[in-house]
Length: 419
Image (cartoon, rainbow, N blue to C red; front, side, top):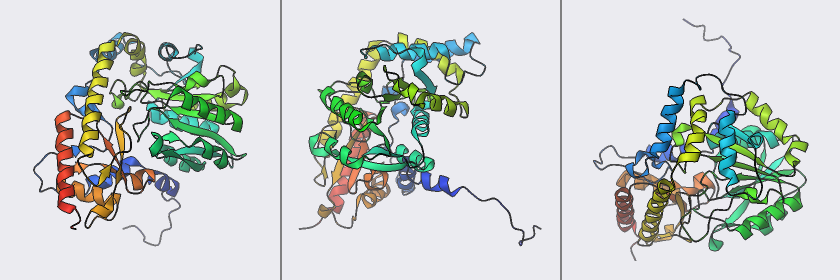
């Protein structure tokens, strides 16, 4: 038997524990843990933005065939270069160049294991002792998690619900100081479903230039727009301010499990090269993992040959679901949606707990909703720092969405405060 007095010199890395505590996955797992095993009805997943499980969101046959062709070619069974397979980088540059006033080259493209790794690369590359970064509230919490891991200080600027979740540009200058290195812009928006106009993005770019900071443009939901505002890539303003553009095939092609993303230096003036950011990006990739080589090998065929009718079908499906979600929310008195979503797969909803009995806050609402109705939504207080707000995804089968909204309405009626 082991001597109980033995002193071992190792222990768990507490820094990982604190960083992972800021996680949408962790919050969703917490809510899922409160599901009742006695409910025979199927669980309605309105929490996570992964519609790949639903038949109406199946990816294109072009993408599937590209994977098969890449495997059968036997050209992509080995290790890939640090920055990615050259043909994939060229294809990504050509794909993004459709929307830009200047031309990217393969040298501007770094292939990553999904957009999450692109975020890791970006934050590691810009970090230095004492640095801080400006993050949106609400925003995608992986930025907080990764910043905590990197010891990169976070300062939050608000997105304004009464102005379509636009950036509070005036507040940015007050938040920034000499140690501020970057601002993160998520467009189309997660968790808000917002889409920013050309003029608003230009204003952000000019403000960042004034402050001498770069823009990290998270565009993983790029082109998934279905309102009156078209998608405008931040890279358009690369001549005003250096931009690190992040994207992937995960959302537009509905294949998050394929883990293929990119980081792009949208910087025609070469400022990122002169400042050492490009060298730092390559340095990080030299000591990290690569996306699967055969997925990279399939990218040219996926990006070049996917037909517009596939994208149109996805947009039509998302718009129908967004409309039904917005209309369904309006039938629940305790919920208010300040703006109909115009992009991505989510909507932010304000919860009025004063209308409800025995519901203390957004987390309590979500936990009891899961237990009583087997519906999963995200409490935005814990997940996004927005107390008594909820994030709901509408990217699912219409029948499942309608069922979920009916259950939420029934839950409200059961808990409504008696007059």
